[in-house]
Length: 182
Length: 440
Image (cartoon, rainbow over all chains, first blue to last red; front, top):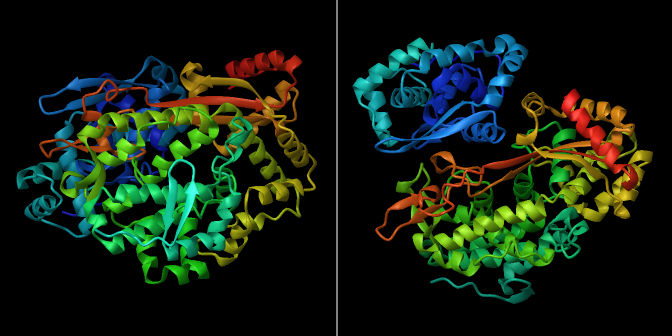
C-alpha cells in the first residue's frame, strides 16, 4: 500500500476544530479523535499540515491550542471522561457555538465539504482505530514507498508504536475510504 | 568535574557576581553584545513601572550565571568541558538577535518583508549574527557550530532545554529580574529550590527526545511557584494594559511613517536569512535610535504620536472585555479578523467615534495560563516532567496538586485604544460599546 495525497482549499485550524466538533453531532469528539480526524483532513489538503511525530501518533500543537482557544471563547464545551486506562476529554459545540455555526458555514461554503465528509467517515470509528490508521498513514508517508502490513508493523515497533499486522489491515480499509491509500 | 577558569567577575543584581572566562569577556566586549546595553529588557513597561529600565545586557549575564548553576546539577554537563563551555556561550549570547522594542520590531519586519513568524524572529537573527559577525566567529572558533546547534537545535538534549524550555535559564533569570526592577513581588519564587531540584530526564520516557530537563518530584511546589510567577508577571507587568497602549502607539507611529513618508528607511525591516546588509544596520539599531528614526519622519501624524509618547500622554482604553463576555456572533467575527479587517474596523470605528481612524487601535490580547493542563503534556510552553522517588516519570498535569487540574486556559481580551480627553471618556466608551454590540 502507498499513501495518496488530496488537494482542497485550506481552512484555518480553529475552523477545522470547531466544525469537526459540529459535524460529529451531539456526542462531539474526544481529543484523540479530533487530532486524528484533522490529521487525515490535513493530508487531504483541507487544512495546513501542522502535524509532527508524537508519542501517540501524529499530533498537532496548533490543533490542541485551537481547541483550547475555542473552549476559552465559549464556542466549545470540554468535558472530562474517565476510562480504565486514561482520562479523556470530549469536545462539543457549546450553546454559543451552536448560535454562530450557521453563519460560519454559510460564509465558508464549499470549502468545508471535504471536512464534513472526512468527519462522517471517521466519527464512529473509535479512538484506537483512528490512532492506528493515522500511524499507518504517517509511516507510509515517511517511508515514501509501498509497504506490506508486516513491514508497516515492524516500522511502527521502531517508533514504539504497538500495532499488529492485523490492525494494519483494518486501518488500510479506513484509509481507502478516506481516499488516502492506493 | 569541570570548573571554568574565570578571568573577570561582573556584579549584577539578583545573582551577585557573575564569573566570565577570557573568551566570554571577549564575547561580552563585542559590538553585538555591547549593543544590548541600549535595549531595554521590558521596552515600554517603564511607563507603568518607572524602575523597569534594566537592559538585555544584564539579563544576558544573569542568564549565563543561571545556566551555570543549573548545569552544575546535571552530571552529563558538569563532567563535560565541551558541553559546559558551549552551553555558557549559548546562554550568554541568546538575546543578541533582539531588535529594539523586541516584538514591535519583529512585527514590523514580518509586515514589511511579508514573512511568517517562523521565517523571522530574534532566535534566527541570533544565529545569523553568530554565523556572519566576524568578531563572534573569530572568538568562538571551533565551538561555533555547537553553540548554533544549541540556539537552533536539530535534536534535543538536556543542554538544549537549559537554553529553551519551560524551566530554562532565561525564564528563571528574567522572572526574578523583571520583578525586582518593576518593584513588584509577583515574580518572586524559590529559584534556589527550583535549580536544586532540576535533573536530567532520560529520553526513553519522552516523545523522541534524547534527554530532557525536568525536576525531582520534591521540587514540585517550587516549580508550581515558578509557574505562578510566570502567570502573574504576564498578567500584571508584561501584558499591563498601559504598556499595551504604549506599544500599540509606537507600532502605529512606525506603520504611519513607513506608509506615508517616502523618505522613511524601510530597508531596516527587509530581512532575509543571513543577509549581511540587514545585519549591519541591525547592529546599529537600539531603542533610542528607533525612536529617533520614527521622530525624524515627515509624516505629521507620526510626529503627533511620538510626541505624545515622549510626554506620556497615552491613548485610553475605551473598550476592554474578555472575549467570553462578548456576545457570540460578535465574538466569532472577532476571531476571524485579519490585519486587513482590523484596518477597516478602525476606519469604521473612527467615523463612529469622530476620531481620526489612524489614531484608533484595535488590539486582541492573549495571556497563557501555564498551570493549564495541556493535552499529551505538550503545551505551548513545553512539557514539565518530574521524576518520582521510584524512578518513574510523570508530567506536570498528572502530579496531584490543587493546581494541576486548573482549567483556566488562555485569557483572551479585545481592546480599543484611542486618544480621548477625560471629560469625553464616558461618552466615547459608550460609543465604542454600542459599536461593538451593533456593528461587529
